[in-house]
Image (tube, rainbow, N blue to C red; front, side):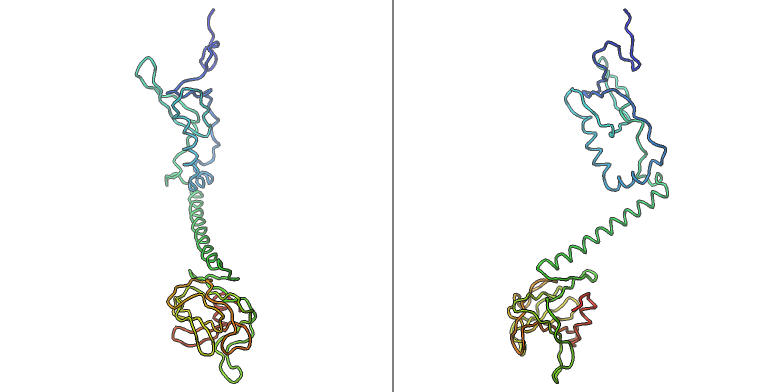
Length: 287
């Protein structure tokens, strides 16, 4: 009795309707429907390529095609291959075989002449978004470092962080007081309250000082200085580099003091003692 062939070309009573290719069996060579008529370099494709998703997915999905064993393999439909070569077992002739998804290959989305104007704008916006994200991450890391030792507040000016030096209550301002000049501000707080470096600096002085009992003087990167007086204990020494938010001392009641507090002064680069309040506000801190 004559054998009838199925529409796909295999014999009706053939036990195996698969087509072997170099040890890979591709199940039912059915073509997928053609993609929509939208631009082959659409926004989703460009974004995926820019994010590296196509490379990662392609490496993962194509890997089953190069397996060494001869058993059946399920090939992902999202791994299009334009052409696969197979060798006739009776000859040494190689011939091309259409593969799954071969009719769905997209043009190179990275070729400049393939991008439509809208897609070019999307690529530019994506690049800007990546740059903005990296900059925000960098700024966040600087702020996090400034707050790492317990400072309650930190602000960023350019690449430099500034922190609140101590938690407490402002009890005395800059200017004339009791017939003398008060060259700083007083922040009342319990003895032992941490005092933090206002910004990145080098310790210029750390030790005894007339009137202050103990003090710490920091020289900032721009040449200005911050002075911390009446401290109870110091945790730094002269010549040491400190970063914004590093604990340098603790509030005390030493020297000429009527109660535990931090006496804070700001000296300009030329040594002029300036009002700390507007200086702090200029650097994002409201004392």
